[in-house]
Image (cartoon, rainbow, N blue to C red; front, top):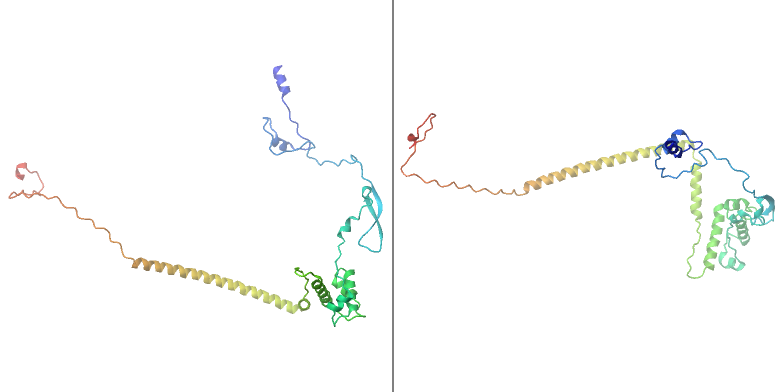
Length: 293
């Protein structure tokens, strides 16, 4: 009975719904190992949770009118909008950015802006179009009254407009202020467009010739780089050989160090025996001690 109670008290881990057996075996074991350090939520299983529709109250929408502040004609439009947002401003009205085109008086024009090539009526027409089309000079050139006024290019219109803006900024600025005046170089713009027209009007033969010349130029550059690399390697070898020869010459010229000479060890003095000479027995064989005396 005790064993059965112990077995019944042991906790059994149930595999979550949708989890494969192999994955569950990696997470849990019979030895009750410690759970993984990374947090995991398996309460909903590993299947895609379906959207619970109808759990919250739906926000009502209404078909309501609105006006666009960017338009000056008072046009009325309609769209679907949440009922809670009724009476609020049009959300895209914040993108209505307009260019501030300067306005000049008659006195300022006569004193500072007068030009023999431009009349005041033509200048007024240019600035009116600049306000209407937000300085889109291509559109301004298209809508320009070329019948009433002199035929102008886009560069001429830009040059006149920016010249007047710079002149008014200089006149109206307080003394000592640092001005950021826009500058337009009409000559540079004309040359740029002329170069683009020439580039666009090339014949297929000219395009092929240009591509061939570009390839030849690349080949010349690669050969030049290889030649420079060879000269650098050769220079390295020459410098290395020069350094070795200089080291050898320096070693030859350097005086050799004299080794300290060892003094001959004095032999111990042997006292000479006066008048007694002992014979030398160099022959092999047995000798008597009495023969040596």
